[in-house]
Length: 245
Image 1 (spheres, rainbow, N blue to C red):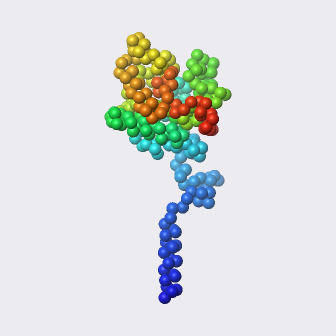
Image 2: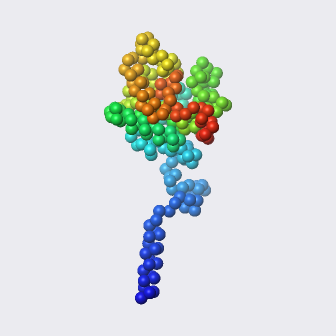
Image 3: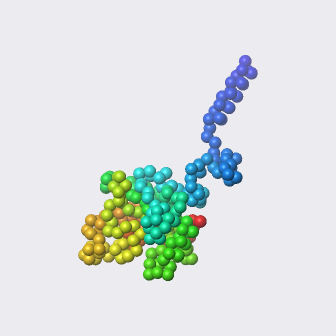
């Protein structure tokens, strides 16, 4: 009788153990093309995998309702070339992703007919260098952070280029396209821009709505780009965060 009871307990323990979820540790990784890849990494592009390994997270994993349309994954940007050859997703530092979710949640309470749409987020320094090379000897140089000086907030995963869109993904008017380099994109004297008919009243109101939503979640606007928001200062980023490789 004791042997039967012991056998029953042993079978029960083995059954429970087999159902327990195995943690992702090195022994559980699978080999693929001679490289060690964790199951959680499956399906990621080379750039996305690099961002993931450095601790950045896909915004869609935090809030799937936020739209993403990376402008540097297309040639219609100020560089006129594709810079993110294999990246389609928006990655951010976990703190930034959480703050963006907060902004989206707030937007939904005041304008449920609209959504945030991301045009750029975490950016590797190698891409920053390509952007800087494009403008360094032109009058537009101050629109792009110099990698030699530590780059910009995108290079720490603490900045987003963002706008508002309808629930079908169509963006609403902001007066200029994203990454437009000129005074019509500045936010420090928008009443003048309206008076001079460089942007219209509706675009101004839309910009103000975007800033209201982002500021609510702790984001800081950039005076020269209505679409750019930082979660912290450059000094804070250099002190507490790592540059994206």
